[in-house]
Length: 272
Image (cartoon, rainbow, N blue to C red):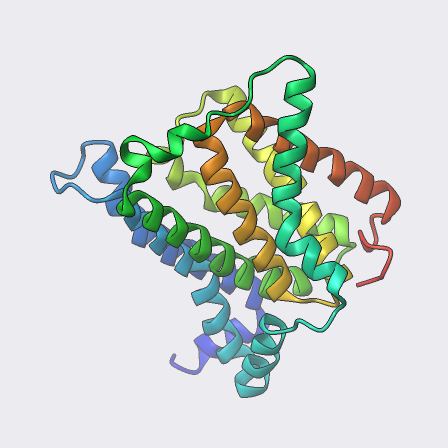
């Protein structure tokens, strides 16, 4: 029995990965969801949320170690530290979310919207170390924790079997389902917002596949972009929800352009 499980994981590594990633995250954030729904008397801080990031990366390490041994873990870690891909991709990964923010602010100004109220960041709960520290912790945890799994483990295996676009779509479905428990404590969306959220998720996944393939499979660069995006969004939501909406729309536009110009097979002019 003990030998059957490792063999099954080797033969069904993707299935094992998604099951384990879901289990780890959902078990860790279950107390937070129950507390938010008043089904648990114990009050749990929202900053508990960052633990959910352990699911994708933890599952990736575990399944890689079982299925591919030390060589697999070494290759996995190598992609997490791959940074020699040209300065342009580092700049894109590190600063494009900030550029999107500034562009979105200017677009809204053209249409008569006021400047974002940055003063909100210096008042109330947003000026506390707890909020700033907790927000940054979550941004880094999910940027690194998610990408080490979704793009670092699942995407290359899916692309071995499918086109880049189809692999991205499949990954997006699992990525979206993985978020479901968070709707019980973190998001307050109606059906329209939920649909928009999932559309934005797919668009973001296309962009991240483009970035991953264009950098020769650098998990580091997609994690850097995801982390930066998280940080920009956290603070942008405080000063202007409209800016965040425009930013998401711009990512969707970029996804359409990538799907057309990069071609569905690779979603990148540089191959995969």
